[in-house]
Structure formats: structure tokens, C-alpha cells
Image (cartoon, rainbow, N blue to C red; front, side, top):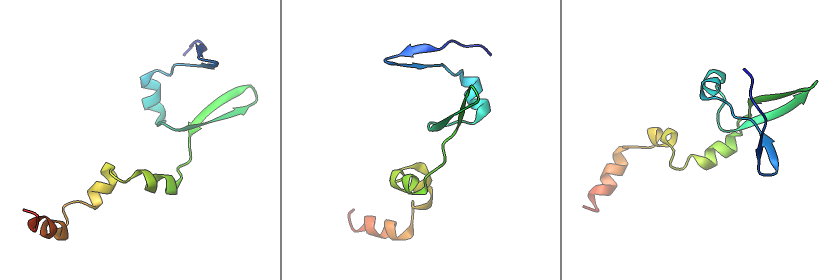
Amino acid sequence: MLTNIISIGNSKGIRIPKVLLEMSGLANKVELKVKEGEIRVIPAKVNEEEINDTMILSEKSLETDWNKPEDEEAWKSLQ
């Protein structure tokens, strides 16, 4: 697939079609590597500390920390 390099402020960039992103499995964070005249876009390695800091109200944390019996007991006293 051919595409054009475009101006984005003082930088340059490319648009990646949605279908290619879906096929590649790339998410929000990527790492760019240059090798032998190529620029490679690869998934960024996940930092466990960063995940834990950003999971405060995420679905993943809520699925394990939701509807516990002790929570129900605490809410009863407020009603």
C-alpha cells in the first residue's frame, strides 16, 4: 500500500488506515526503530508500574474489585 508523508506541525507523519491498524494489533503506544533504510513501528513494551498507576478506575480493575460483600455492608449504613 502506498501513502504520502504529510506535514504535521514541524514534524512529518503518515496516516495508517484503520484496517492496517486492526490487522497489526498495534495500540496507542508504539516504538519506532530505524534499520537499514526502514522505519519499523512495533508495539511498545508494557511497563507494569505504568499499568497499575493508570488502572484506578479502569474496567480491568473494576472487574476484580466490584460488588464485594463488604461493600454492600458499608453502603447499608449510608442508606
